[in-house]
Length: 165
View 1: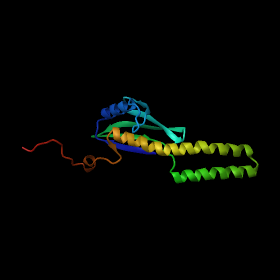
View 2 (view 1 turned 45 degrees about the vertical axis):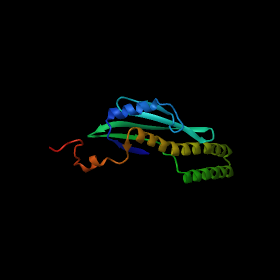
View 3 (view 1 turned 90 degrees about the vertical axis):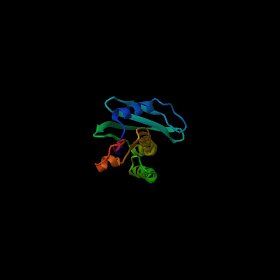
View 4 (view 1 turned 135 degrees about the vertical axis):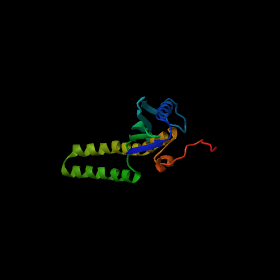
């Protein structure tokens, strides 16, 4: 899923905040993040969380922080996985395909399809939950939003802190 977030913070402040967040340790309410942030604004951040009991999935978000006018834009991509209903659909289709392959006489291919179901479901489920968590972390620490600020959208914003004489 491609995304664009808007922040009123300066690009250098966003880069600094993201770098500081990467160095923070894990707490019960704050997951540990891996990755890097370059001075030019490119970043790649990963989050690893349990999917099924002890099986974990690491999801990566890649993006760039750029300054455009008065706003800082955070553009990037994160794998979005699949909603729980689609996960159930995939979980049902792969065994059916395996049975059809057995009936056709491709036992080895059918076994491969059955093994594949575990990997596919872990990937789909992990990315579904981790992608939202990664986007929330970005929004919180960069004070960013998917909607542009009204001051930038309206075009006739008054300067703050100005006094009438």
